[in-house]
Length: 494
Ligand code: GLN
Image (cartoon, rainbow, N blue to C red; front, side):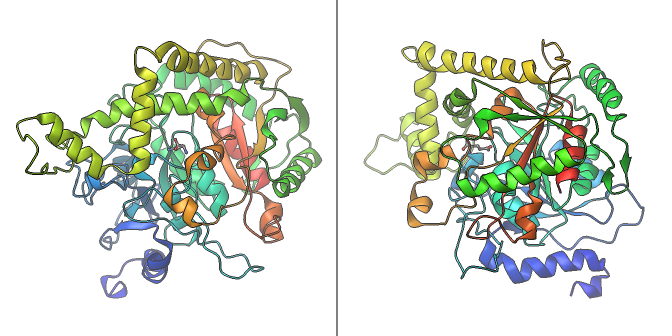
């Protein structure tokens, strides 16, 4: 069928992989029609890109993995989708995720959990989480079902699944990629990002979609982009690139934040991260220990702020004008809008979303506001200050000064462990255990910094350094606007 339509063999390969593997992996929730062969050669021609199901597409539903939006088809494409298509990419389908992006294991989905497609040679078959919330996007890339995928990352949702599935995932600097048409979870943190097998593929897509969009009110202005990019170009000149990436790392200052090796970190993760650090050193990088003292408060602050913003964003799904409509039981007073509202929200939102609405509403209530919401905002500022103090480049997105003796990038483990097994406990209620998975990813989100997770080479060479043979991701974090530097260092690790 595909061949008779004369689509490229490349695209044919993706559709075949979806047909073979998706029933088990559950990465795609919607597959689009076979594309027409494109005529003109454009920058992204030949790429088949999967889109997380919280990014609006008019050619297929956008459910956010929620019963609330099960029949929703957007009347417009998100800016990122339009940019991809205008550059010649095919949108191959929509990917599974945690409901509205809330979760770390991709188990909170009306479409069911995503099963990690990685298969370690050492172990008998075991179902593990693909990570979340962009688990479908990471699994689709890992299983060879698309060239690359878009995800969203609010507190780690690209980096965590990338780490668990053994692929690369970039959360860009906040405000560089348009959020217009992306369903809001926590606006001050939400970023669209890219997952692919290699950094050059990520770069190719990043360069196409990181453009100013006046429809996104939180987009970084052209002036700020220009300032950061000018400064970055100066610094990048020091590290000439070849076709194969970095030639030398002489002069690069790599910071190792001591707080990113917490008690929860599985000991098996430490060795591959150390190997990455010494490989960078061998290529000329200077390794410097750094301290980000507010790190231990970041996770709690993140969950207060993200839930507060989510509670406000979720208010639009009232089951009256927007979202699934449920008729309240006949015994209830139908004239009361609140009954209709409660009936829809109790049925159509999953447990985790309901929990966030309650947490967030409480944090914003008059009694709790100072102790929770404001306190979390203060912690957020401290986290930002920590980063600004240790980076060599100035933060052009806010007030900061450059630290000449600081670091160009930071390196740390992406996650505290390998992909967690999909036990019934994890499937039903991932609770606090799931929240702890984000401890290493949320600080960069609070500060809006670019962060890239790449599979550690050590883990791929030995088919997983962890005893169980599963992938281990290493994160590279940079100053705001230094996404290209983060990608270049990622290439050196890859
Ligand atoms: N796991 C985090 C949460 O549930 C992050 C989610 C995300 O980045 N979308 O809030």
